[in-house]
Length: 248
Image: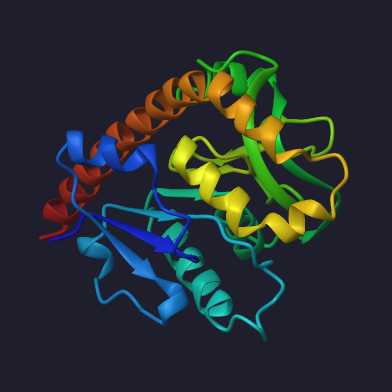
């Protein structure tokens, strides 16, 4: 049985360093390749957590990418069934949209290494509290979103108010990328070279140099965050199993 389902929107956007954590903790996972029209067959009783990765599409492009509408329905069902959720970049935007918040195009394409500001709630958060204020993390997005009702803002940046949020104990959305490896960043730069050439403030060579500087620390931030998320997932599954046994 695959405990964790991973919604993948594009082949080059995978789990990165997070895959190692799952393997290390012996947690089974399975990619759902949405770009190949795959759909999960598991029932919620079999799913330990749902991870929603990034992608170049916008959550409002349902006509061009029909799976987005179906995906939002799945996210709403996961929230209703208390399934732990983690959304990264597009994934965070999808969680926000599924929870009733507006997602829209931002005024600045935040691509590269930029600092984030932790809120008081973020500094106290068990999963993100180890990340210092003004930490340099990796970004690749041009859309923004409002906070869903009942969500807590955990981090922001100069260009985007909502960089990280949580809803209760089990739902987290990150606009930035804690999972990326240097190889992933190199691939993204190569694949999006034409897009980057239209943005005069982005220098791919500098981005690669910044990656060499900042990626070791990002790896630490990401592994610590995701390890704690998976520990919380395990605790959540145990509680669900106890509740089911109590009903029998």
